[in-house]
Image (cartoon, rainbow, N blue to C red):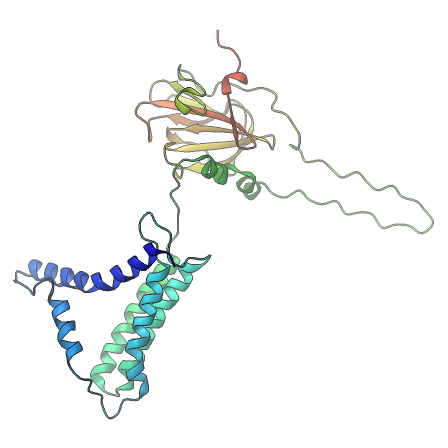
Length: 322
């Protein structure tokens, strides 16, 4: 475990009573009461640690072991949490499921310890814990997970790479070879080529009307900027299929990516509104968005052309304007 992860575990244990104190104090303020001090939880814990243990004659080893197991589960959950800007102490694929499971296991030990006492009072507490678990855990696991990616070449390639294109493109059907006839030589049928495999883009069109304000390579730009009035129509620069539509790339606002001829991608950023959805086929000149200023300092269209993820100068492909 790295040092940051270890410090995060200790901070989580030390600050947990403070969070309970803040909650109790906030409830008291809204109820018009003075409430307990913020550090009251620390004082209570200090007193409890100085006292001896008293066990019911009806309880078993389950009641004695449950607190230690609950603390162990909390420690395990803190280990896989990632502090802001730092890697987790122990992270792995699917650790979100493990995180939910380990917290559920801690609640199970708490309920088991309550039931082990064999009294109605502890039974009511156990029932409450199970109710909260039944409400919280399914909501935690069923909540959609999303990742907000900052702009980098690697993140761009992740969004618009062949993997994303393959997910939006149905696989080509494989031809079934005819059964061979004994004594007769048959030629194998040629494999049908994909409709777009190896096809070149016949011609590019300007994606919108306006004034060219930013050129490729200037200040690190990976495309061109076209300035115009808000809600100016944005059209597809070439026929293709929409493979991305959303706001997941920081700095691009409402972004639309269209795939052309298996190797080219065109990107349309900072839109006011997107008029097509992922998986739609578009024709050259079809209106696909409206110009806007989402995640930009002015109303404009940022337009990029990429081949296999590498940015190209759009002015080398677009026709000259008169």
